[in-house]
View (cartoon, one colour):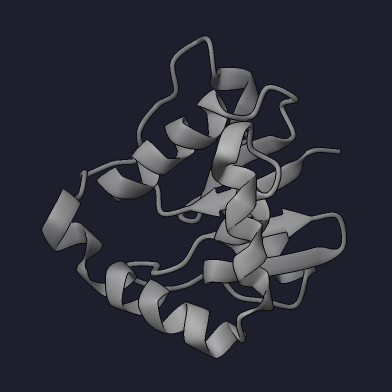
Length: 133
């Protein structure tokens, strides 16, 4: 079963990040669902978590029975991408609270920097199979 990336479906930066992952995931390891979807809420509930309310400020990776958030999710995704992006996984040795500090600062400003859509983006037919919701 592919790992599932849960992302903020109305965040322009997050949508661009999904496209970035798809373009560098030749093994089709990742599937995607917006955090605003019922599927994401159900999946998180299954793992004892609740979906972030309001404007979600995290990316979540559900990989089998493991759930990763923020920088932990981003670095574990990078580990499986083609090209030099794998090298970013070395930052997993940095304590999570230090990695997440930078993540939180960026996440709090991403709408201001990149904008926000009124609705979740509909994937192109080419990528529709990779989206679960």
